[in-house]
Image (cartoon, rainbow, N blue to C red; front, side, top):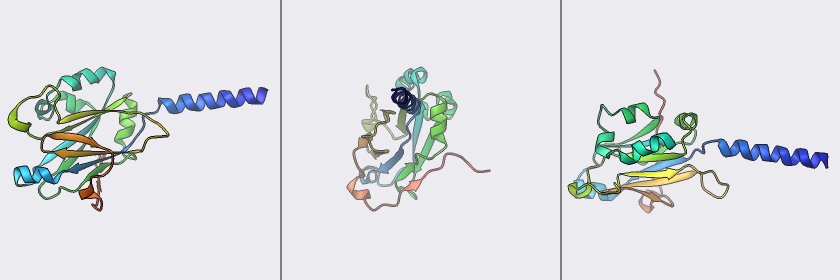
Length: 182
């Protein structure tokens, strides 16, 4: 009986400890061919993946995407994030790997969600209540969920996908590194 109690206590401790960790995902982002169709080029775009916690969540909800990407924005510069770059020369899919150092920064900041924001022009030039250029994803760890997350930049904003898009099935995915080497 004592061994059983020790076993149950150990199992409970493992569940508690693993439940506190911030899960990390391979976050893959794709530039839809429809973006090039709309603009006649692949525009230079940045996608930020920012770890947020309950304290910073209201700021991220309230901020306009154009303001977030402005050079003097303190929310962007003061918050742990990774930036994926797309351009006419490089529109290949990008991946923030689950092994990237930024995930540790998200954990250190008690992040329980990630925000993805893209500096795409507003569709029709009009502000919308729920800006499709930003999306929030809860960080949940489950043995039943995949360790990959897929997103697509469309002419109107970001969408989450269940799988890689068909047009990118054989595409080479570039892993973006957030840690810059001197």
